[in-house]
Length: 183
Image (cartoon, rainbow, N blue to C red; front, side, top):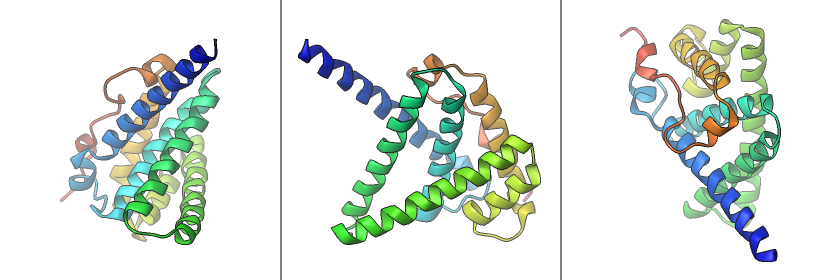
């Protein structure tokens, strides 16, 4: 019986890791960087990963159990990856703790800003938050294509049930190239 419990936990862990990998893949689509202006830097990649995790968590919060548990496991997996990445970069234990606290504050701050803008249907507020956080710019107009992509992604995720979110294959999101900014 105990062996079955471990298998179940191991299967759940693998499913969460697979979802995390699919979210990472969605955050690495080249057109996010080439067409929507996300900086191809450590900071830009962190921001776009956070954005995709936030969008997925947003959908998980809308679904019935066990979605809430899956959401927490996903957050744990993402932060474990960030912790590991910092350690691979040579950051020491004390430095990792301080940086992880800052990353968590940044993540939850962005989640609040993006959720509020999406809940209100306020594309201007969403663009302003994305310009500031993801693009590192003050001009919200620069982030309008990214805001359109984010809104469309939230809409696409809202049509997916838990089985679809956890299914193999890519996370079903729109092609960022379809929201290309004007040259």
